[in-house]
Length: 286
Length: 251
Image 1 (cartoon, each protein chain N blue to C red):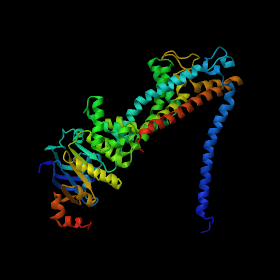
Image 2 (spheres, rainbow over the protein chains, first blue to last red):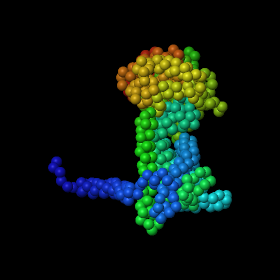
Image 3 (cartoon, one colour):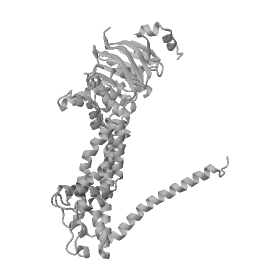
Image 4 (cartoon, rainbow over the protein chains, first blue to last red):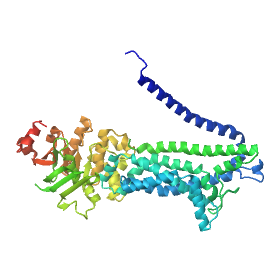
């Protein structure tokens, strides 16, 4: 019974080492990103950064802030997420409840996966072409619509994967009481899967608010806070991009501060959603 | 005897494998009918044909008629949700819906719009929880999640939830197999209490439970109904050799 090193033990050890290494890589990358953003961004993160729009000479290192980009990003990401949700949730429920394992369902899922894989710049270029054809100019609305397009496949597939884990007995219990399939979907599936659905929505939101390429052409960039759907809108990822591209160290540091703000928004939303899903999960059946 | 459910020339298949063979039976009104037989004999399949649940199973096919109060529930213009309103189901394992105790009981009434006012719902919730023998235990915490109840309580909640849509028939598919002995007893007592108002069909594989509950017995074997009759006749005086063998515990 004494322990001896055998091939199986060595194999296990090697795999364990690989696992620890991967774990360290992931956690290390996250820590490194946070540290870089904090270290470089925190000194430049002033109150005026988040309460003011860029004043003259802002991009040369003078006064102002990036309130325009914060507001623009929030408008676009929230708007895009809402529109994406309006289409995603019904589609995901339809996929699950009506056409689940059918051939059609398979094709719908495949197309969504393909859409998910399309680079965001392509969405941007696509939106831009449409807008040119319609005679529209870069605007908040364009940004919202393109972000909605970008988020839609992510959200739908994420919700779809969540709903697939729905316990079958629950569906049967509600059918046995004489529910229609729609009632099963709206009254039982959504309630049971609400925590997962919230997570899926925020996953899409996070992707939307962090995306620079898709809104590059369609939303434009401006120093003003957008006042209507038709006015152009700035966004945080582009604020980072433009500021980092200047040759002035002060402005580059502000780019990190902007990145920090973006990170904080995403973190707040993530933790908020975690909190919310535990609260909402009170009634779910394990 | 007045039949409540009549089954005529019923055959069912799962992906080509025949699970029910030429079933012709009548189930008496407001009595407890027990369907018994060894595992895989088609008891549950037969039960599922009474509330049109078989069609939810992929690959299942069915031919023949099931009449409830003389109305064929498989006719084309029949609304399946109405069938299931008339024929309630108590499943093998309790499955509370992801909502509060109160909302579980109210669920069916809401979708069928059987009540008008809020107060009516409140009274109905109390009434049906009392009927299922659960009120004393949960009356104080109606708005707690249903999943916080014990499994035995959950099963009684499911009973209350089913009764709340005012069915005429209760189907019960081994309703006590997931429960502890005391909870099982609870459920059995309730079913006995309720039998004067509801036609009850119970699937069970425990012979003793069948003897305790049955007024009328259907014995199935390999997809066929071997024998059916009053519990006295079937238990005391079985006509068929296979029934006798089953009662003696041969299979």
